[in-house]
Amino acid sequence: MKTTNVTTPMPASIVEGVLKKFQISDLNEATIREIVSIVNDIEEESGEKFIRMEMGVPGLKPSQVGTDAEIEALKKGVASDYPMLEGIKPLKKETSRFVKAFIDLDVSPEGCIPTVGSMQGSYANFLVAGQLDEKKDTILFIDPGFPVQKQQLAVLGYKYESFDVYDYRGKALRAKLESYFSQGHISSVIYSNPNNPTWVCFNEEELQIIGELATKYDVVVFEDLAYFAMDFRKDLSQPFEVPYQASVGKYTDNYVLMISSSKAFSYAGQRTGMVCISDKLYHRFYPNLEKRFGVGKYGQVLVTRILYALSSGTCHSAQYALAAIFKAACDGDYNFLADLEEYKERGHLMKGLFLKYGFELIYDKDMDEPLADGFYFTIRYPGMTGGQLLGELMYYGISAITLGKTGSHQEGLRACVSQTSKERFAELETRLKAFQEHHS
Ligand SMILES: Cc1ncc(COP(=O)(O)O)c(C=O)c1O
Image (cartoon, rainbow, N blue to C red; front, side, top):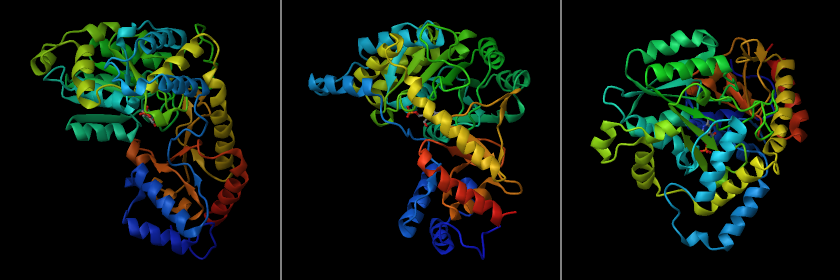
């Protein structure tokens, strides 16, 4: 279903030439970075700008509180000192406070450990999880998910299994999860909440199911909070007040939270995130870990063996940035969610435009409740696969990623709002209108 005999915003000859050069027969199989390169090339050759919706990068200015604190720390000379592997004391203390203030969970400062982005947080924890018990050699993804985490498992040579949560929301999640956990080979389970790519948010019932089964089958839960408190249907911005960011930590002690600074504080460039390990798991002794690493406690292995080997700590000055951000947020001096409302507004308007021109939402509800407007949404166009749709949209100067790489079984695309400011909405509308005219 190729766009032919019509004039498109991007010249067809250029789009075809670039797609041919990359030799990707089905765009459903393309990685995010490949799509970025394809779009860059089309932009360069055509001199026209895309509406770029493929990569989940922060589209806002970095947190000022963090930037100021980091500059201050650099001026004091922290750059010449190796940071402690487990993180600087003020950061550990403020993270523990932040977790209490915004999730209402008690995690001791000891278990709050900085990592080089949540990317390193997941890699390091996967590594430990895979060594807990010889029989448990597989990690389970509640998909759709963040494709790079599967790449991390490929690098580690670990096995994983996954299922698309689309058909298993609410009570249906229990039997599905149990069908994996009860086989005895699952060491840990991972999901993001809010979810990348769908923006689905698990409700309390679902988190309770995950938590209860994790305890029953002794599975570690990795709760990836990369989009912390960005379920904009609720006001999660007030410290120490309900409502809180929902978490599995309310329902099990077998958890590790991953709090990235990239999106919530627009601090992606400094590659800092926190892993927060429940007190019980941090101190839990695993004979298998001792056999391999000489020490057997989960937290100790993570810090003194894995993080030491991977990067020997996290950027010193960035830790001061994060400590200041958490402190200001907990003290009520910095409403980090106020800046992020921009994503909600963009999400609302952009979704509206796609719907107006014949697109449909794929993941559209958390049970009965429409999904929040936010960083991502998922779309399809009747009669097209995800790969076909992306290929066609390239001619209209609109990019996204296909759901194929995320573990979703649905045919369609993930659209990210972060790189498109409101000034470009009129152009988006013109392009979508042309797309619909040429495809109906
Ligand atoms: C679900 C999810 N997890 C983890 C990350 C990585 O976070 P970081 O930038 O802290 O490494 C991202 C970034 O897009 C993400 O979407």
